[in-house]
Amino acid sequence: MTYDSVKRVLAIVPNWLGDVAMATPALRALHRRFPQAELSVSGPPAACALLDGLPWISHFLPVPPRARVVDLFHAATRLRPKARDIAVVFPHSFRAALLARLSGARRRVGHARDGRRFLLTDRVEPHREDGRIAPVYMATEYLDIVKALGCEDDHRGLELAASARAIAEVREHLVGPGSLVGIAPGAAFGPSKRWAPERYAEVADRLREASGAQCVLLTGPGEEDTRRAVQKAARQPLVECDEGRPTIDSLKAAISQLDLLIGNDSGPRHVAIAFHVPTICIMGPTRPVYSAGPYERGTVIRVDVDCGPCQRPVCTEDHRCMTRITPDRVVESALAYLPAARV
Image 1 (tube, rainbow, N blue to C red):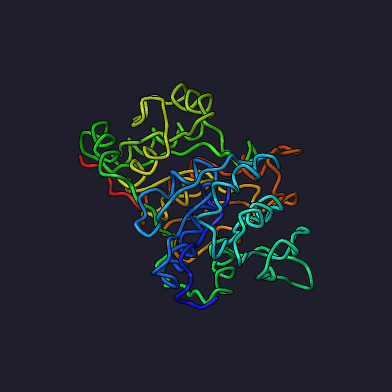
Image 2 (image 1 turned 30 degrees about the vertical axis):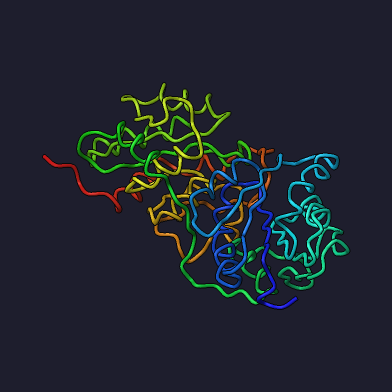
């Protein structure tokens, strides 16, 4: 297969929104390497919605998250016309590599791990230390995969786009003076990643008092209880830009307008990085190396504990990696990025 003969490239992207955002440098590198080709993306509907608006992606082909094998066969039928030449597999899962194989792509590129080596034509060895697979920054991991195709990093970092329509709708809810501070208390990974809603409410109240900030509450589908808990604990209601019906479009649009985002180690953090918004990340059970890249402006707040980082979605101890992070520490870090209140 020659460089000029490549006309169809399929990228199978991860499930988690943060990982999808961190895959954008590699996706952009694919486009730069094969500018004459149509670059199609396949992944869960939310992942496709997150990448929507990027001008170098030609088509989106949603597939159900954690699809059954029978669903993969049906999906492969739809993917086949868009995967004729190359399929790039970003997720670690066996299912993702199987989907690439079923798509009929002549070259199938991905990490040789988890028993899926035989499904790939171009097998990229994962990063190892002392013979064992070791974590690296996810954007670097994804760029390592596409290097097998001659792709190079342009060092521009994460990239997302928000539509003008969605931004206009969000702006209708953002009135008055003051910096815009996003409060993102959710985490789809599991409760172990979530700092207490009451503490987020306290931070929002104190930032309003100290800097006159407007605090915008950002939650996703299924996080209604978290949203209500924050609003109930806050002395003043936080701004809601989505009228209680969050979408990926409204999330991107809201974050693109912020002066600062405060949240857990979850998807909104990486969306903010893509829009060059400073972040205060409250990190508990996860290893910092997975998400510690050169593109983030902000502060990661964490405490070292003897049981972590455990990488577990549900804490089996007393959640001390998160409870030992105080509102004082978060407020102090946030104020370094905000102007003082006018008197």
